[in-house]
Length: 425
Image (cartoon, rainbow, N blue to C red; front, top):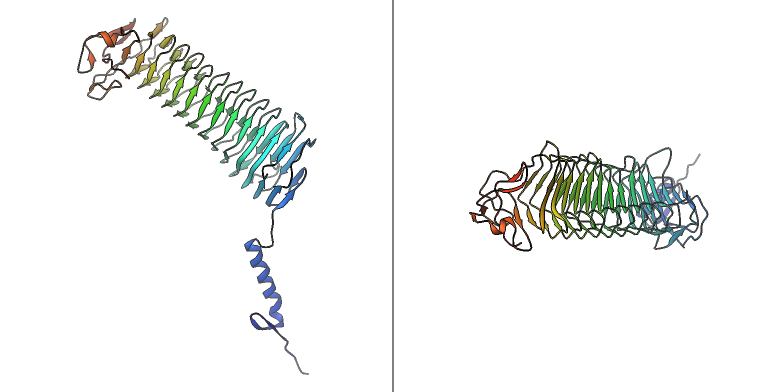
């Protein structure tokens, strides 16, 4: 019996017939790896995404009565809206875009360049991690614009949440360690941001003209840096039973209170902020707001006190400029037996301090040291007490080496023993 061997000539030379299928498989695998055989999937109407991959909106979806318009139920999905709109009919429980699967945690989902409007919630992420919203606009929804529930380590950047019926951007139920940066949150009927979770980082956002608080914080160990918080009907930044948060380098203007720290909020750091022209106090610490540090801020031209401390103690107020506030520069009432430390501040108001009974013995100076004071003097100790009429204690009292030659009695058991000599700042 004679056996025959068949060879086939190809671009690689002569191949044995048995190797042809292998070569074909290698070619197809290479094409798949380079993406040559894959393409983004167009979406033209409501859809449940059940296969990982790239998707895009081929057109706007308008006046949809769906309960959920775009439902992403798998990981490793990119949804590019291409600037198109997903629009509902204001059904209270409806959702424009949902990222959720009841049976698993989703990850690596990116939603970008899309507008959601007229839903109950514009965009909803639940049990999602390491995902991203970018250039998403959520507006005119009956509830919140963007809502995160049990969502960890996600990024929300350059998004817009405006004119929604509840909160602009809401984080709740263990939505920890998220980054929120460069977003604009405006004209929502409740708070701009509501952060009920921990360890989130919020940078360089604009929070404007919301009907509730600008930023409401119920969580712990969050960082808020470089945000602009302006024109909100409630308080600019509101901490309630919130501990260990860092509030730094924010601009807080034209709100109700500038910053409120209340109801057993401990060990927060409020530093380097500009707080001006608010309807009430620049900073209000009330009802066991204990152990907080307030340093390096500017509290100017607020319509009540620059700083008001009520029923709170063990706070450190150091190195702040407190100027031209309509009532007191600093107000203390019922501060208890545990003193606040108030040193190296620059007070320049018609009335610099109001200390009202019952009040504890707060500390108004530290021991004199050869360190440059807030007024530029060579020694530090207490505070600078100036007034616009030129009759402030630190303006009219002789001084030696930057320290006034006699103590300044503010109230019973409240004496600045080392007041600083005034200098214009």
